[in-house]
Image (cartoon, rainbow, N blue to C red):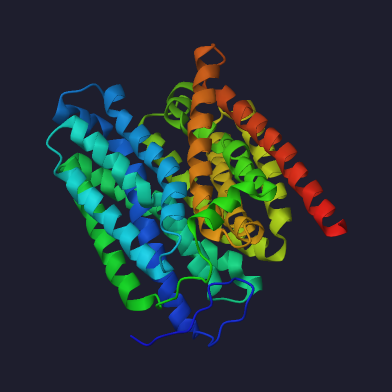
Length: 405
């Protein structure tokens, strides 16, 4: 493998500019890991009844494994980023994807429900740190004005997983055996390890890297505000999408077969949003974040008003998926404001999105339990996006204050 000199600093020029092909191969390797992670994270949602049958538990009890994985993401991202502060990023990526691959393969072999739940928690630990480090590596290999698009290409693996990987894993897992789905995801992880080993250039640990320097990210107000935008402002799409099956069948009165169509539309929207949002973020980073919050308010409100109409429901589901446009922008924003603690900040972005997932699903469930109906989840989402705008405005004010100081 040819060695490419890569400067870990996003602002400093690289010693030797990598070729376009070298950059593309690195992005492909990193996106492959994202595809595996996305497939493994979401496929379980369609396989819960199968898992429940294997371990003789109820489907709601089987749902604990989803919570266990999400908890692993939330805890693992900051903890790993701090503990691995003195590791080279290529070595860290190899370690993280190795843990992910082994965790999925062992999940497929779990003899008891308790061991399966524990393994899902362990498998979730590398999730956020992998995406954070992968984003930094991808951004470091391109000019500053192309960083968000580089991050978006890495995250494209995750969004394609929602469109292709998850439905295929769910289909074969239901038709054959759910354990096959996790074995396949583990194999994708091993393929990613090989691709990273082959194509991601070796790097050196940054001078002065330490646990305390990474922890310093949480002392920066702009880092905390950006994470809050992700955790609060983007809980809206999860408030709506968590209950899309019941909304499709009980509000729009569509057959159960249309639930899969809605999920595909959401996945298409995520891919469109990721590509378009990456391009927009390179033009205006903060404009993309703020604009997507306003966009989400309009779309989610429209969802609640028109959910009974099948055509409008489909349109709103697709457009809600497009709200993922802010993903690359938020990731890039964190790299900008974290200074010399980029690994922790970038990794924590995925912890924030998992908090958004949990918050949105919980609040959506509350309004349904209070009798407001499944369509009301759109209003919950719009409210969360509205709160996100207040956090976004606070971040803008702090930016202006910093520039005028």
